[in-house]
Amino acid sequence: MFGRERIEYKTHDQVRSMRSAGLVVARALETVRDAVRPGMTTADLDALAAAVIADAGATPSFLGYEGFPASLCVSVNDEVVHGIPGPRELRAGDVVSVDCGAIVDGWHGDSAVSFVLGEGEPRDVALVEATRRAMWAGIAALATSERLGDVGAAVEDSVRASGESDGVTYGIVEDYVGHGIGSAMHQPPDVPNYRTREKGPRLRPGMCLAVEPMVTLGDRFTEVCEDDWTVVTDDGARAAHWEHSVAILDEGIWVLTAPDGGAAELAQLGVQVAPLAA
Image 1 (cartoon, rainbow, N blue to C red):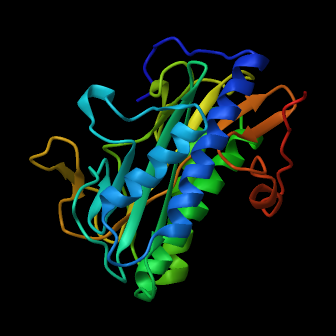
Image 2: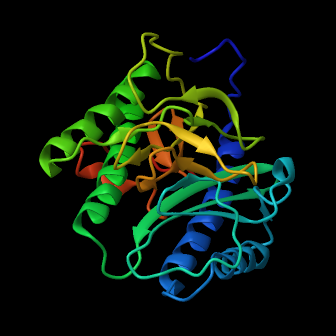
């Protein structure tokens, strides 16, 4: 699962550049979330995010990445990740997942949010919330655990607990996982969203990791569409996706793509963040 590839450990200054990139991503996602309405196209959302990134003097991480044609991934309903923005019109009740990345001074930030557009079915709202909670549980584990494998266990435990509370058996996608991030958007190590037999590498200061659970209302299996990008659930079930990029520092963790560094959410889980020093 974890492999033996070399992990890139960041200096303080490099983490600060990643924080700058992360804040650009946060602004782009906030702009999209505030503006989206039924009747808008997924291409409209991409244009909004592209403008925010350009205005900040940053570069989109996704545009041109292995040929990807846009600045955002916009995935709707049964689309899990990597949806290509286009003429599709969004409708009230859609589950929309928006993934964004930006580069500042050669360093990446990557984050994703999901939401139900307008009034949605209670089960869809619960799915989005279960996925969001699972992401934060995984992030909290970065502060309280010694091994990377503990992060996947925390994510899975959170999803299962939400499922018991919601009366649903959620599927945890295993084909796609979180990742290291830094001078490249995707780096070792993989960050699974489920328990593994391996403990994984030790969590050390200088690591920067993207925690990103993908959860479905059905099973865990996925397939890739004919566009060679869009990943859908194989059973047609709806899916949600949340992601933050997180730095492990000597003093603790700092969520690079959250405006407050994750302070408010993590405080609810008993974790204090460690802000970057000036």
